[in-house]
Image 1: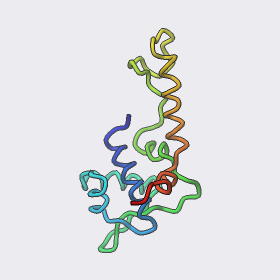
Image 2: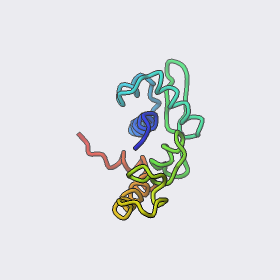
Image 3: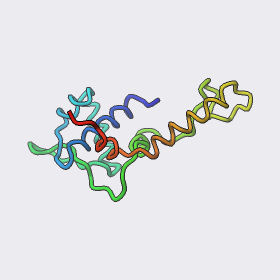
Image 4: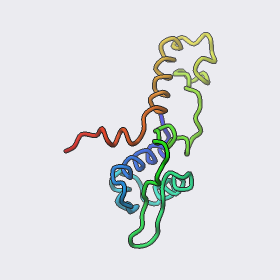
Length: 134
């Protein structure tokens, strides 16, 4: 569903949110989300440029959440790496609904729309606060 870049971004952003308000070092994040550190550094830099994270260099540096006026949805984080697009046809016939003869459209469209809605309405903060404690 997502590119590898977007998956790493979402996992890292969720991890950083769990550690808020402290600044988290790149190596710690990479280990926690099982991502290559050099690649993850570029991803986190993009999130910082987009205004969702702060980045601090030096021995006490790392990445931290930038205070937001509104909660950040999964779709918002994903959009930094891939613009939002209409749901795709399950059979690869372009955007869902563009082929009126599609044999799966009646069943697939509600699922695709539900997934899009889930991503748009689910905030990272909700996911973090609803996690079971161990």
